[in-house]
Length: 135
Image (cartoon, rainbow, N blue to C red):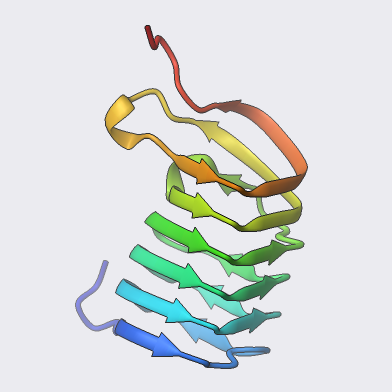
C-alpha cells in the first residue's frame, strides 16, 4: 500500500455513502455506525479492522482492491454482493443478514476463528471450511 492514499479512521456515524466512489482509500481502524452503502464503489481500496454496526450494504462494487481483513459486522444487512466474499476477511458477525451473496474460503487456524452469532445467510456457501482439524 502506498503512503499517499487517503485514510479513513475513527468513528463515522449516520453517513449516507450511497452512490459514492472511493478511489485508493485505506479504511484503517474505522467504525461505521448506522451508515448506508448503497451502490458504493471501492476502487483500489484496502481495509483493516473495519466495523459496521447497524449499517445497510447493498450492491457494493469492488475493483482492483488490496487486502481486507478483520471486518466486523453487527446488526448489519449485506445484500447483493457481486464478488464472492472471502470468509477469511470476516472476524465477527452478529445479528446480521447476508442475502444474495456467495461466501467462500477456508479458515484453518483456530486463532483466526470466525464468530457468527444470531445471523442469517441467504445465498451460497462455496467450498467453505470454518474449522479444519479441530478435536
